[in-house]
Length: 352
Image: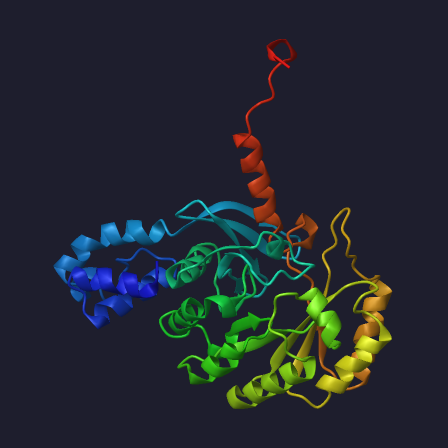
């Protein structure tokens, strides 16, 4: 379902644009659709036909997403496994300091080799209403003042729905434009479309390597930008919107944590309107990738800072619960599959 579908349903029950705006704002706050405002009761600003039609509409928007399970982390975050109306599942993450990470797809087609979500492939797109419904759901638990599109999926591959969601969150959702963060591996359409939008979000670009060949190995189905070209496109957007580009770097031991890569980062980003977010890999048992040692992470931070690159360590929220993006969904899918699998016959029942 898309946001326009909800607007159409409101129009069909007699809502004017002013009424639609008030109903949508109530929904995005995590409130009942017929919630009044401080000095005005619902019956004073909503026509009778709209009030009579809201229960059915409320049932529709409530069914968009439901909380399947919640997994609090020691860092103040909470990973939410969210079930969609068709039974598919995505993940949202309540972040410390009133942030929320949302998903834009079920699965992902980019296939980043270190990403659990990418291993499942792309199953389907989320409609814009399903995207903003994650915000409405999260606001039932705590305030949300920042939304980052860094959950399951590649936002550029669902661009129309993501941009519709960003527009609504930056208007009726009451979120500052620089507190809406569009994360992407890099896609030409992003650099064409974002400057044209009424709500221009901040941009986070997944870099992961300054070596073009290695980046192609790590992000096998990402657009084949040379890292230097991607940085130049990011810099142009940063200067346009007047807030820095965030460059994402998942730190993999023995792969992209060497001195050559650090010097490459300095070469590309020194003097740029940019922040380097170093994300130490969330290691799992029997994983082909590993998180660098803590001392090495600190060395990298110091070296980049000393050479003019603003750098922050961004540990994946909820690492203490193995909550890397896609892991909750993968575990839930395994549980569902196990429950649906026919039981093994008893020895006395076997015919082989």
